[in-house]
Image (cartoon, rainbow, N blue to C red; front, side):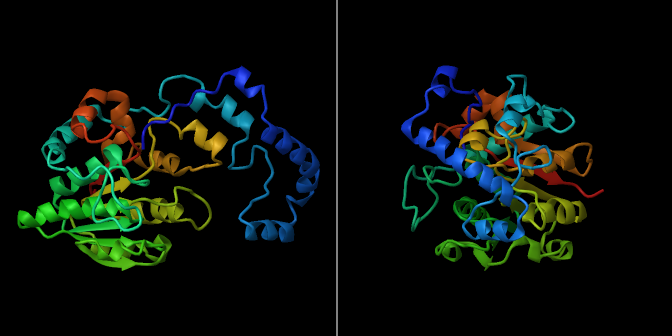
Length: 329
């Protein structure tokens, strides 16, 4: 995913509402007072949930930021990247990792386009997983040559792992891919090297389950719902699984924009209020068992030229992958 700019539109653009916006204003004026009365009505909230909508209070207790919260946030005030801490992002380590991956990036030459409904292999212009995220996934599977790639959240990323597994096989290493995916694409199980597709949420598995399957040198690829809330996969993974891992493994988290906050446009225009990267950053900070090796966003911020070379002109540099290793104490 390319980096999304956080600048606000010019004031003059914001001051001229369209016809649709005027209609929305009238609707808000009419419904606002009524909805406010239903905020604490459990029956009404259940009814709205059935229609795919939340009605929640807009105050400082809410996990959903107001537009004023966004306006005042240090993440969008133009100051330097707010989460760029050398105790988390060791640039020497990042440089060394990128140099080690470079030879493998040179061999990854998928097509630019293909069928989204029935892909025959990975292609760059897919809607889900591309740019430096795809290149780094391929290169890491080639560099580490794991016996197992365990994915939470599968699809186009799995096609990347499969391509790397095929090259590993040519060198005498068998890499199996196991997918935990509650909503699998119909073609997921047909991907070469996919040994199993488990149609259950990550919360179904405890730490022992992961430790029994992941061995030293394996890859644990996480592409979650990106939201920490009661009972979510993120809460389960970051609070119950990762702190209890016992093996030396390589981990990945997707849609992580550190050292930045999430793209401002996502909050203001798309109502996307993800928070996974904040709990991940807290877990990484001061944790001797976790070492960041690569991040699409952090490398774009500090090493744009090197990241561009890494892509070999095949796709844009950037994205939202963060790779880190777990080293047992």
